[in-house]
Amino acid sequence: MGKGFEIEFDKNFGRNLEREVMRMAQGHIDGLAKEGTRAADRVLASHGGQPVEVVKSVLQRELKRAGLDITGSELTRFAQQISDGGRVVIESDHI
Image 1 (cartoon, rainbow, N blue to C red):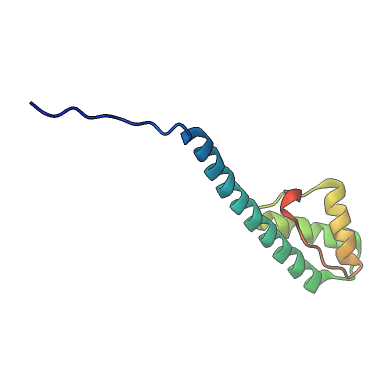
Image 2: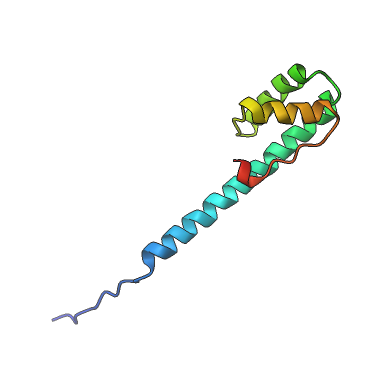
């Protein structure tokens, strides 16, 4: 008859899986932050110096296209910065 076989389980499987999922998620979040910064750069180039409410509307639309849903005081702060001619850099920890 056939030979027996042994199955060996990795005791660290759960921890390794969690670490890999976190690494992949962080990569996705970092990519969203970069795309959001690029979107803000486009808005700065096209609407820098314009009134905050105009910038805010365009910025929200561009950020949504980049996969981000930034609203409220953070959106207003970013719009004010662009209105004042400043660059917005979206950090991963803001997502």
